[in-house]
Length: 158
Image 1 (cartoon, rainbow, N blue to C red):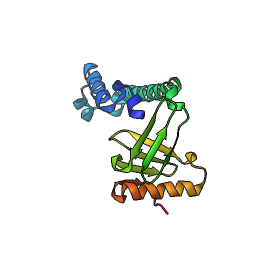
Image 2 (image 1 turned 120 degrees about the horizontal axis):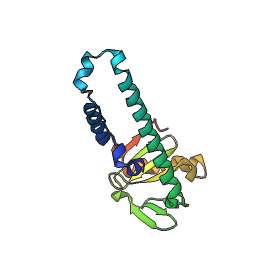
Image 3 (image 1 turned 180 degrees about the vertical axis):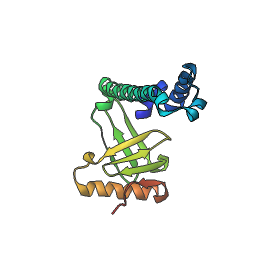
Image 4 (image 1 turned 60 degrees about the vertical axis):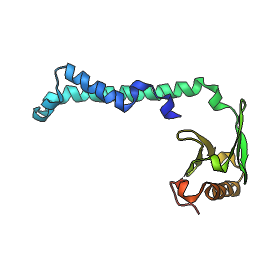
C-alpha cells in the first residue's frame, strides 16, 4: 500500500536525478565536490538535508491524508481459512482463493501476508484471531498449504 500511495516525484529514481540536475544547474557540478573544502559545501549540505526533510514530511503527510480520506481501507474485514483456501469478506466485496492460486506468504511477529499476485496480498494481523492457539493454527495451516519454500518468516516459528 505504501508504494502505491507514494507520489511519483518522491520515489528515489526520480528524486535523485532531479537533485543532481538541480545542483548542476546551480553551478555546483558534483565533480567539484572532490576538491571543495567542507566550508564551501556547507550551504549545499544544508540545502540537501532540508530537501530530504521536506520530501520525507511530504511523503508522510501524503500517506496520512490518503489513509484518512480513503474509507475503504478502514472497513470491517472478516473471513476464514480452511483446507480448501482463504475466504476474505469486506463490506463491498467477497473473494475466495484456493491454496493453489496463492503465490507466497510472509510472516512478521504480529502479521501474516498471503500474496495472490506479485504485489497484492491479504493481510492477517494477529488481532484477527480470538486466541493465540487460533493464530498458531493459522500459521501452521499457512506453512503446510503454501509450502515451506514459499513461506518467509522474520523470526523462527515455534
